[in-house]
Structures are given as structure tokens and as C-alpha cells.
Amino acid sequence: MDYETLEQVMRRTALMAGARIMEIYEADDFEVRSKADDSPVTAADEAADALIYEQLANAFPNTLIVTEEQAESHAGRAENFLIVDPLDGTKEFVKRRGEFTVNIAWVEGGHPVRGVVYAPAKGRLFYTRADGAAVEETGAFDFDRPDTLRPLSVSAPGNEALVVVASKSHRDQATDDYIAKYAVADMTSAGSSLKFCLVASGEAHLYPRLGRTMEWDTAAGHAVLSGAGGKVVRFDDHAPLTYGKPGYENPFFIAHAPGVTLQPV
Image (cartoon, rainbow, N blue to C red; front, side, top):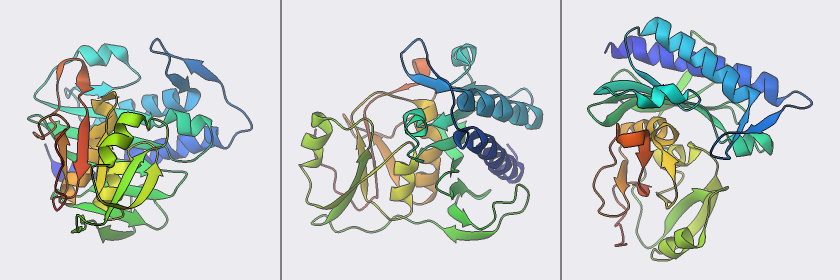
């Protein structure tokens, strides 16, 4: 893979998809339907998916593209592949809370090594550079010309005062019970893959997820966090979370800064 081209294409594609999503988000009304698994889907999911798939397929022909909104892509298998969630956090989108993201990632040998997470309503853009380092971009978000880049690096927390981030839409008692094992100085909540980015930027130290997720939900955020020096591990045995699993389904996991002493299950 040409990482220079990958960086440019993923960044530009995420920004284009975000612009399309915001056109629908800012409309007076939009239709919400239920998929087979009862999760919501909107015209924004479908429009972003079509745009992203076209851009990636044109740039990287003969590369497997796994995307949430195209069920037939879930049967594909390859050692290296692109994986997409065109609109992560549809519930946040429907409730007009703004915390939804465009996620695109490149997986190599079971690990998400490059990725982009764009939250268009929040004006936050996180991605990995060609060298694998993670940055947050601020500025005009020109499709073809990056503006100010801030290197991302996880913080070095003291385990006696952790900042924990948890889901807005999927928080449950099991998650609260696990968080209670830590000395928590502050709690914050966020939707979609922004939780990974808060750990990557040093705004939080720990993000446990005790609930069902798919690889397209996590790959881009995982790549950004890895590029900032963070880790994502399985909840059960703290082994690295890998990708390309059957059905592209994740186990429970923990995203964290390396300085966090993980508690046993």
C-alpha cells in the first residue's frame, strides 16, 4: 500500500462524505428506517456509503472494501482490506446530538494501521499520517489541502485519578461495575468512535466497551489511538484486538493509554 496516497484519499473522502452528511443533517426533516437488526439507517448513511465506496474503489481497485451498509461485502475475506462505517453513531445523528463520525480504516495482517475519524458536526478531524503518527487537523478542512496539524499523544495518567470515557447510547450496569474498579477522577461521555479519539488526544485515559460492536465501528478509531501511542485490547484476556474475524464482530474490549493499570475482569 502507498501510504502517502492512502492518507490523501482517506482524508479527502472522509471530508467529502461529511459534507454530504451535513446537507441531510441540516435539512428540516429526514427519514429514519430500521435495518434487519433493528438498528436505524438514514439517507445520510446511504449517501455517505455510496460516495465513500466510489472514491475508495476508484483509488484502490482490486482491494477488498468492507462497509457496514453493504451486507454482501461482509462475506469478503482478505489479509489486507479497507473497512468503512460511513456514519457511525446514527442514533446521535437522529437525535441531532452531533456526535457522529465518518470512519475509514486500512487493516494489514489483522491490525488497523491507518485510519481517519471525522466528526463533521463537531468540526473535529483525526487521522493517521503516512508514517503512522496520529494528528488532529483544525482549520478550513479544504478537501485537498490540509491546514494546521496537531500531533496526538496519549497522556501518562496517574492510576489514582483517571478520566474515563463511556458511550452515551450504550452505557449499562456491567460497564459501570467495571469502571468502579478504578480510581476515577472524572467521567465523560461521547458518541461513536470519538471515544477512541479522546483517549488518543489525552482528553481521557480509559474507554471500556462491554457491548456488541463490529469492526467497522472501531477500526478507524483504533488506528488513530494506536498512532497516538495507545492500545486496544480484548476485555477477557487483554490480548490485542485483531481484525478480519468471522462476521467482522468484535468481543468486548478496552481502549486505554499504556500507563493505565488494567483491572482483571
